[in-house]
Length: 214
Image (cartoon, one colour):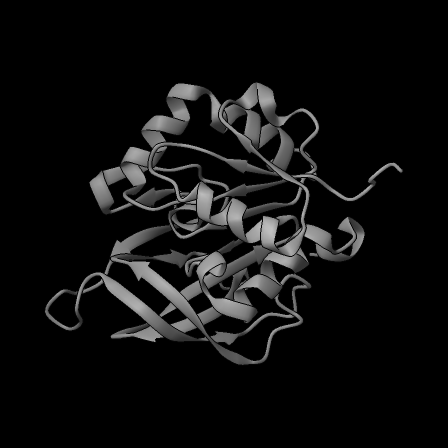
């Protein structure tokens, strides 16, 4: 019997946490495969870019492998659903203070550091996420829920409409973004228990015409 469910491609790069995402997708029974190079995008209906580590290192690796051009063609110029996680959210913006990195520039804005004099850096552990958007990706979540974070930097969108959820850590910051087929979380959905698994399931299984509304 043919399986018509979308296949989720998980980008595997040296600074990522791709195996944790694959484990979560397997637990959910979601068809998925690791992508080690852009030519493996064929057959992937949705794309997840997980990330740990630093923005500059991630961008250097992705650029050397030719990912930015291929991803822009499929996601920004196309309509493939995309989910960034942690550093995978930060590099969607134009630049990051971390390693003075030039990022993908899909969303207007920048990434800046938490004030280490005000809070412990990195933020590591559970924190409350407040949903602020009606985007379908987050629509099934409660208005506030707890998710798992590991981050020293946070995104500052230039367009407030891109913010889909916020969190407080010394300052209020954007902890999820959503615009059409581009979605991302600063928190680690794959490590955030039932609420995080629900988000991954929504991204992987919701019909594309319902998931990717403006």
